Length: 194
Image: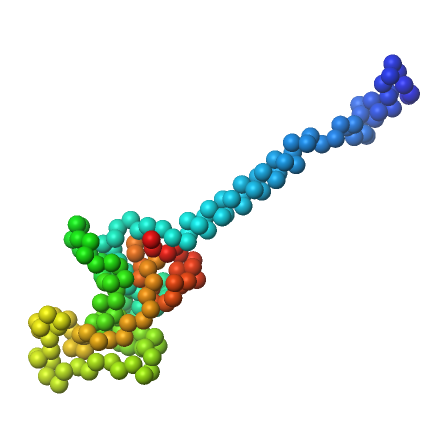
């Protein structure tokens, strides 16, 4: 066990018996590779956050006006026992070629008409000093914006109701207009509508 022709025989004896370590250091490519993988993972997360920040909706005719900044809560229907309302009202343009109104405009109109407060479920969003319109004394005299008799029941539906700040987001590839400031989409973990 000594030197044999310039070779360290002690090293080779241990190596053959499995007691020694390789004289070569770890390959240098492993450290940069792990850093590269960490960098790619970081870039992927960053891209996912950027994608989550805004997204298009697949069908702009499917516009959902949410009652609250809550995507799952359902509500009892005030005019139909044993019926549950989803967390939103559909207010999309139903004609495939129609681009007349934006999702925010559609939902603002729905709020303004009083359709977003069935059974007073959104009273918590209405400031106490806001004056809601009153129902006409004779419901048969009620008129909509065009002067026509309203087709919806109850008769407290009509212009002049409270409209909160609204933000367009994307839920299930559909436009979701949610009451709240611009960061409400991010707070709910959904992308903003672009």
